[in-house]
Length: 179
Image (tube, rainbow, N blue to C red; front, top):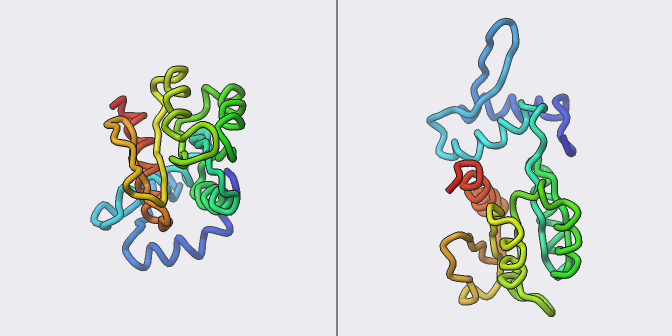
């Protein structure tokens, strides 16, 4: 899993267990960690814990399309730190090339709304024609630009890691639930 090694996680898991956020289960001599159901951030934690404990499942893949390289890089680093595989593009044509190569593995498009040439919504329309089950999150610093579409989500910029995590997980879970 990208950047996550069990040895480096032990101190963090210990603190989260002490704080009541995680709980340890022991069955058949094997210990596992799961999110505490009473935690206020249970859904996000369960997603992260599942990724950390289920190495047999390949990571979910997200395609980021952001014309500001620094924003794209920070977003990629955050998503990779949570166990996602991330593909990064800085314009719609580059995103379409990446999509053509990784079409079946990409589960979510995370795209800026305003980009030179083709906008995020136009890019999403094109990719959704090819993969109707693709999930989409738009992001923009101009909140009035939020695309009004029932099948997408909107992340206002600047965003914090918690809001990024929540909205990405919510959209990916919609995909797995078939909604």
